Structure formats: C-alpha cells, structure tokens
Image 1 (cartoon, rainbow, N blue to C red):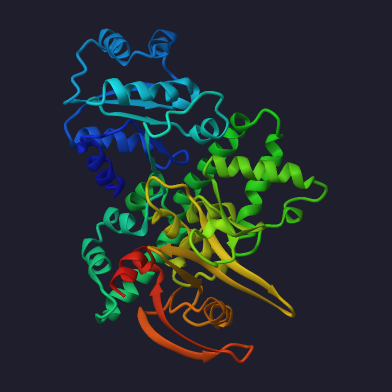
Image 2: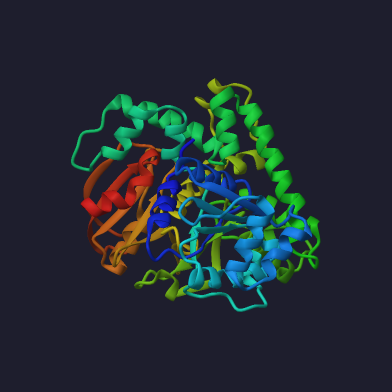
Length: 455
C-alpha cells in the first residue's frame, strides 16, 4: 500500500539542510513500515535500532554525545560501514531512551549528511514531560495519521475513481456513476477505517466481521498500553474515558457523562493521556474572530474525536456479517460518526509538521444554541465547515455565524453531489446574509483545500 507521507519523506531526505526527523503518531498507524518502505524504495541500507528490544550493548552506544563515536560503534556492531549517502539510521521506540532525542542535535550539527529518523508510539509523553533540553530548531517533525480515503482507494485498486477525485474542479460536471460508486466506497471506508492493518485485511477478505475482530484486538492493545501512560491513574478509569468517546461524538464532551462518582480532575487527566497517545483529539471551541483560531478559545467547551472511524465502529459494537449489509445500514450515531470522519480528514490535511489542532464554533445565545461543526484556516481566511450525515439539513447556525463574522465563503460536507451555490437568506434574527457555499460529498472532503485554492 502507498502512503502519501512517503513523498514528504523523500523530499526531506533530498534536502541539503536536512535535520534529524522525529516521526509522531499513534501505535499501529504504520510508522515503522513507512520507514522500511522508504529505505526499500530509495535503495538505502537501513540500520534499525529498537530501544525497547535492543540489549544494553546497543543502547549504551547512544549515551555518547559524539555522533561519530556513535556511528563507529554501530558499524562495529552491525559489521559494515554506515555510508551517509547510502544509509538510513532509524531509531525506533525512542521513548524508551528519551535522552537520545536531546543528542540528535549533535547529528544535525556534526554529521548532517547521515539521514536519521526517530519514532516511538509513546513519544508524545516524552515530549510533553521531558526533563532535558530539547534540540529546538535542530530536529524536524512529521505527524503520521491513519490512511486517508484517497490512500484507501489506491490500496483497493480503484485507480480510475481516484483520478476523478484528484482531478475534479468545482466548475466541472460530476458523473452520476462516480457519485454512486464513491459513496458506496466511502461508506465502506467509514466502517473499515484507516488503520493500515485493517485496510490490508479488508482488501484481502472483504469481511467486515474479520475487520471488526482485528479492530477489537487493536483496541485491546491500546488498553494494554494504559499502564505505560501513567503509574498514577487506574487503568480502568482510562478505559472508561476511552469507551465514552464514541458515545459522545458530535456533542461537547462532558466529564459527568463518563461515569458516575468519578472526579472531574481524574477524568480530565485520563483524557489528556489519551490525547497524548494520539487516540483522541480535542476539537476546541473558538470564537472564530481571527487567525490563529487557537488565539481566542472557550477553554471548557470542546468535543473529542477518536483516532479512527473504524475503531469507533468497533467500539460501538458494529460487527456486520456481510459486505452487502453496509448498503442498508443506518447508524444510531450517524451524525456523530460523520463528524468523526470529517474531523479525521481535516486533521490529516494539517501541515505534517504542525500540532493536531482542530476547532469548532458554538454560541450559547439566549433561547438557542448555535454551532458550526468545524472551523479551518485556509491561508489568511477562516472557513466554517458544516457536516450533515444525509443529503439535507438546515444551516441556521451557519447562516448566523456567517452574518456575525461577515465572511463570504463556507463549506458543507454531506451525502449529496458537489455544488457551489450563492446563499442569500435571512437569519432567525431577520439579518440578511449572503455568501458562497461549497458543498462537497464526504468522498471529496479530503480535497477541500485544493478546491478553496481554486475558488
């Protein structure tokens, strides 16, 4: 299977001012596979050190701050020279020896010709709570997400449909056959999700039941990891918080809905651990007054989306026997799952080096609550994004937001065909509002920024 992050890595490795790269992402999103595939495609000799599995004779090599001493010791260990032009040094599970992160600065300064990549499933815990000086400005970051719908299409062999997705522009017609087929495939994708192992199983078996079993196994792996996240917090509590996320999709997260009798502080700490593990992402309420969106937020108001829509479905107990069952499927929390799916798209569209920050807008007006599902930054513009699970739905909150912020462009993601319309309505407060609305089906949501560039 191909990952678009491979192109980012190839660009990084060709740069003259290349810095050591730290690969961040949740467990099982494909970090180790990605690096091995990079080495294979570029015909590089991969020298891989796993700090969780390596013995003390190997880990002891990295206690030196002299990169040349480290490389020479590795050469003696692996039995061959580490030529910078033909070698890739991969430091996996680096959270097990976090002081090596600080020493990466010496590779950047004294041995820049040797490409070095570090990764670790618990790396964000180290970065958030490190007791050493991080080499700011001397390392680069790449965030790896689950597979996107475009990657899913390519893995499934749907090359022609992928071309339609990547080439379509808002001023072109959209074929009915493409809409029907892509809608079916996107529904498959929402249930299967983007975890590489699950996608691979789906392509081989087309069995939702087998995929659900693997997804449950992945969820079990995450639960087993809880004890590594914190020695202070009970594993059972972290598990309850994780299980509560799928139930609250599409709604502001309330600590009181997690479990009776649990302290708010304890639940907040558990949720923070899940976010550090990349199993959950905050969608923070923002006023949307200007850039950056995180500059003016409502700290206590936020939603949570999970790592992957397929894992959400598994957590909710969705275990269909046959592929054909998908056609007539009606999900209890379909609106929440739609928001989860679009949130994944927007998260994957963020720059590979930036933190995973998502925002929405809400306003507790007297007698009414207004909410726009997502706010995205496109260049210097703020673009609100409304999500509707079906083909219809009112846009009262979106009209209200566009009126008070005086914006001229908004987006909607739903199950209908793509379109651009000129909206000219009055809000519930009888205020006139005019703006352009870009409406996209779910299967085109990953192309949102490309379309905004054209518009």
